[in-house]
Image (cartoon, rainbow, N blue to C red; front, top):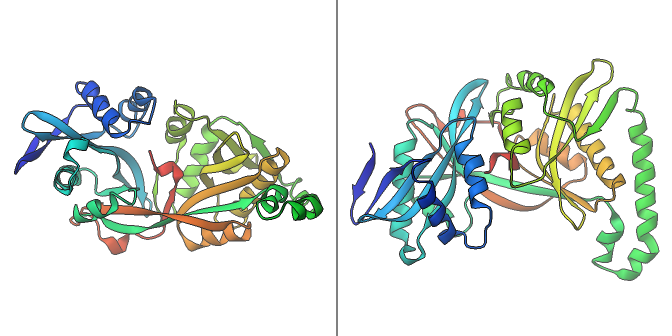
Length: 348
């Protein structure tokens, strides 16, 4: 099916190569403050290792008035491979921004893609969430953003300059000293590395974890290279912990930083969700603190055991982001989808 005519608005499949210019024009209408459209388009749509995107024009007569993009993803469901699709870049011309056109675009693009992509998901903003719900999506859950300070002097300074001057340095010194004593026990068994390359060890780590009963995106070397190293829009960094005895990769964190000293964890994975995950976050925090960063945050939706580890590492929930999904009921049952594992890496 190439198009869907229903009423005065209809949806038509767009071609990733032929319609590139028209799609970029619509993006400019919808996201006037965003730059580097062409670089994102070529990276996310033209070079996605999971396959070609699903792109849909919203039309009024012969005029394109909207665009919806769905990026294919390779996922695992309880150890079995499955395809999914990430809803991104919904744009409707400002002259047609009533409920009807956007709803038509969401409904028809969902109907036409869900046969190939049994799991469709997205991260809508508060304004578009009700439209997606009316378009057939349900609320999967809330992805939480967890954060913790790395330096306490700037944190206390937000509340009292006097207290920061009197106690900030003492608290920071005591925290570093205590952390150093605890972490020293691990130096003989673990090694930490920054700015490594995504090599075959990441495939080995993924092979170990892919057998687990999770609903999660593929995290092998191919995906990590595309998502992070080959991403032209951000400068990502890599932190790993390794076993000295076995010379094996035990976990990684992909992160980025900003100019004011904040660290944002984009993705993480460890060989287990217990001891190694705990020390992955613990040692990463120490590394960032020693480098002078002020705070670290991470987004996650999924198993409570991982949330428990974050809390043990002194992360606190600061805010939440809704996640929506639509399922192909002929291929999947909602109750079969448990143990989700979603991070910021699962966005576009």
